[in-house]
Length: 298
Image 1 (cartoon, rainbow, N blue to C red):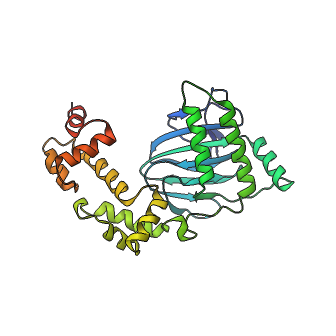
Image 2 (image 1 turned 180 degrees about the vertical axis):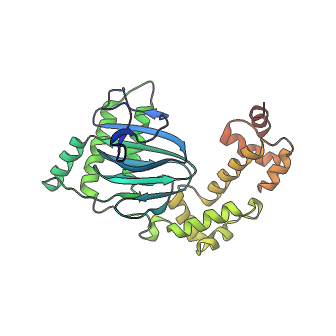
Image 3 (image 1 turned 60 degrees about the vertical axis):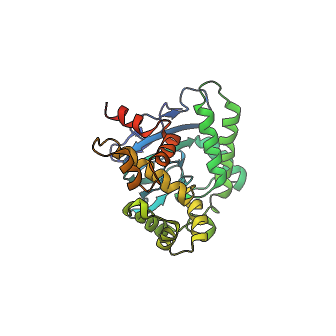
């Protein structure tokens, strides 16, 4: 297989990497058969007027982000949350774009593997399947995560484990491709897109010391109990965990400004005091805010 995960540039008429930047994890040149996997951390990814040669599956890992995709029609937008899965059948022509930082796993399955799975399940090859995106499929999430862990293990290479998961993924796509539905179908799949967008907008535009569970639930139009459960289904984090992560992200930006005292940053971001802020910052970054500031502005 190729050393990079490739798509066809429809305007240029040639192949190119699906992501320009080099992957942080790759299965290339490690002897795996039947799939090619890459893990990426990128900003403002964009892929316009391309085609997937092989069945391509993606798993979103980072914070919620709005993604626009079009195929046989105008761009449609959806908020991707941690654990959301995307499936492009082989031959799909599409454009995709988003703004912001994103971390994701993306892999292609060898088309012979997929065709064998489809034939085994349906007795014949099938064509013309649509893009499935924003899926909440626990099996696909765990399989992709497991394959990525095996690929990223620098000391041991468990080919059998990873290749068995890839075969299982191919069978799962073949068997359930028509049954898998998007996250917005039913409250058991979490918040609807518009609800989640309102909550994230509220979090981003509200002073953090004023954010509380009741206010977040009100932004979604739900009771606090139901909001907490559905928010975690949508993002993989409790409301408190999500807000805490966002506070620490903002803190890393503010610590680069020498004129702001650490105690002031702690209070502005809603922490009880500087020691409370330091405890949570150290958990996430492995160092206290004072040490982080010294290294950041050195």
